[in-house]
Every structure is written in structure tokens, then in C-alpha cells.
Length: 334
Image (cartoon, rainbow, N blue to C red; front, top):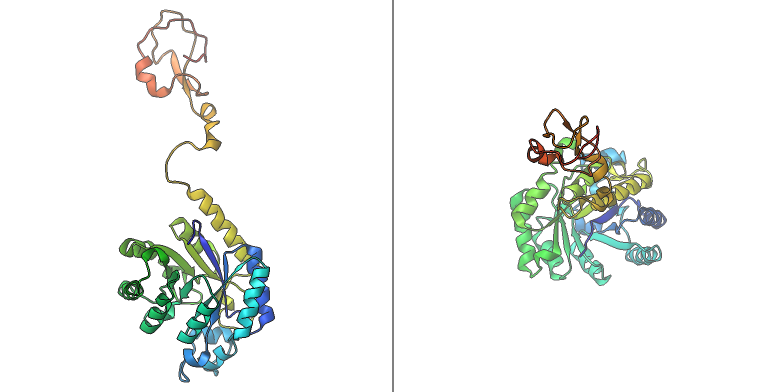
């Protein structure tokens, strides 16, 4: 799938149902040079029942406790025509389009659009028919694991593998489904617990405020980073307040790309940039005072100073007690 960290800018429903706002989000994602800009595809009536309540963060962020979750989501749907228009717009901006489907019909629709991979949201990790449908397409799958324990992750993984998808085509994202996620609840080490137990590619879907945690996740081995972003955190909507603004998104991408470079190959050896500094920073055995030919070298007439172009101080014991074959002035290299 990739040989670098895959960065997904999650526009989600931050378009507020407005396709022009969705295009502006694409502009911001393209400017930040992410790999994918991702939206959400759903039919509200097939996603939630009439009695489904909004989460507390949704009530707080929409400033509305009277609307049902269904009523909220109906305002945030993207039509099929809007999807086609946004895909075309992404191509014009040289950025890849992605969307998460939240119901079976939406998955079929997205597959018909030839999206390159499927993203399983945290809420669907215990949805057996959904998991089977996603795996049936034979495309790479990324699974978010918010609210899940290790047994639930294992069950979902087994369902997908039973459909014939290979582990090489799977990435499991550690995630916490609270918006925003408190730092004390991130538990970033769980990402590598997932890797060790299931032997899969790992990543991190972030809902914290700021950019520190996804950057740290890359340093710990994340191969995919997903992060919500918005044009204005003050907009009304369920996810704006826990999203990055466009400048923060740029900063996160830049930092991740720097961390990628800094990771290296894991072999400890002098780098090309530092080799030239070895003779300057290291030291050699030198005369601490004048030494006549035939004198014995001792701790009284030798010391260790820069530069490192002479005999290494690691040979100190070999030099002490030997005879000077020539005369030396103070600070001469031995």
C-alpha cells in the first residue's frame, strides 16, 4: 500500500452539508499535502433509528439537545451527485478522495466509485455483516478500534481474514472515541500492543486537541495517521471543536514528514553529515610538556586533547611505559 506514513485528513461531516464548504476543505487538505481527504457516506435512516440519542459531545458541540441523532445527521448527508463532484474536484487539486461508509448500501456505492481502500469506523467494529461486506471487495482495509478491547479487535480481524483478505492488506488503528480525547485516556502504547499480538500494520486515529500525539505515534511506528480538520473550530457541528484548523494540519504534516526522515534505518553508525566532525570533536594523546627522545611516556608527560587526528585515547594503556622515539614539544600529537 505504501512505503511512507499515510496521512488521512478527516473532513468527515465538517462540510455541514454544504458542497462548497466541502470543496474548501479539499483545498485546505491539498495545501497541507496530505495523502487523502476523507468524508463520510451514509443514509441517515439506515444508520440510526428514531430513538438513537446524540452523544454528549454532539449535544455540546451543536448547542442543541432537542434534535435527535437522526435529525442531526440528515443535515450532514452528501448526495451521490455530491460525491461525484467532490471526486472530480479532488482530481483537479491532485489529492486522493476517500470516504467512510456507515451502512451496507453506502459501502456498495463507494465500491462502485472505485475508491482504493475501505476505512472501517470504530462504531462498526462489532458489525458482522458490515465487516463481511467490506472484506468482500478485496481491497485494503483500515480498521479503527475506538471503544474496542483486544477480543473485539481479534473477532473483527478474524471475520475479515475469513473472507480471504490478507494481513498485508490490513492496518489497525488505535483510537479513542471521545471528542476531544483527554490526554490521560490516549494510551498510545496500546498501538504497539495491537501490533505485537496480531502481527499487522498499525496506525493511529487521533481525536486529541493539538498535533503532539499523532507525531508521537509516528515515532512509535504508526504507518497511518488520521486526523479531523476544519476551516473554523467555531462552526456549529459535532466535530469542529475537536478538529485541527488548516494551519495546524499543515504543521502536523510537516512534523510527521520530518519524523519519517529522522527514523532512519536503525543501524547505529556515523552519518555522512557528521563524519567530518570526528577529527574536530574527538581527542588524541598529546604531550603535556616537552619530551626528549628516549624518555618513557607516562601520566606525567602525556594528556588527552583535541583534535582527534592522532593516536586514540583508547590506546592510552598501550602508550604508557613505552619509549619516545623522537622529541616532542607541548601539545604535539604522539
